[in-house]
Image 1 (tube, rainbow, N blue to C red):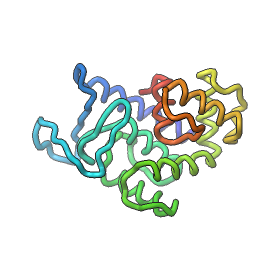
Image 2 (cartoon, rainbow, N blue to C red):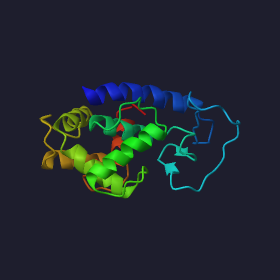
Image 3 (cartoon, one colour):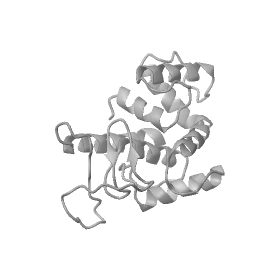
Image 4 (tube, one colour):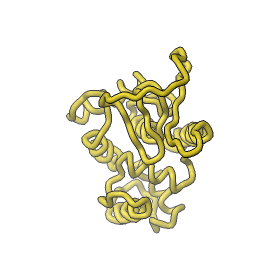
Length: 191
């Protein structure tokens, strides 16, 4: 299954990211192998590419890994837009995949992600039977969905996603957007 293979990679990177974070600081930075190390200090940026999730923050589009970026990479892989490793780093290949998806979705094509891209990803993923079957199986494992895992994003799946969102104390709307996907990964113990 496309989704499951990506999750194995995602789990490994999430564990590495967690191991690298320090004490109370929830900022995780990594240096991609293709970029030379510049210094050991973290620099802050006010560019639109700054990304924040409930677990990590990236202050440079090429400087750190986040679970949210990793989840978006997995989603773009499932939709056929991304072919690289789901490493959580918002690098050129990820930006290119996001831009291609945004262009096809008819939304602002800037390579960044935010509410408009989250909504478009939710629309695309909710229509992808293989992806939703995997999500339903996870929701069944969490005892949030009685089944069947049939790939149909119907009312039962919506209710299960709402229960998941409630469990993660987030906006409850029944949409399987990237933030809800992060919640699922955390509840499944993969983050």
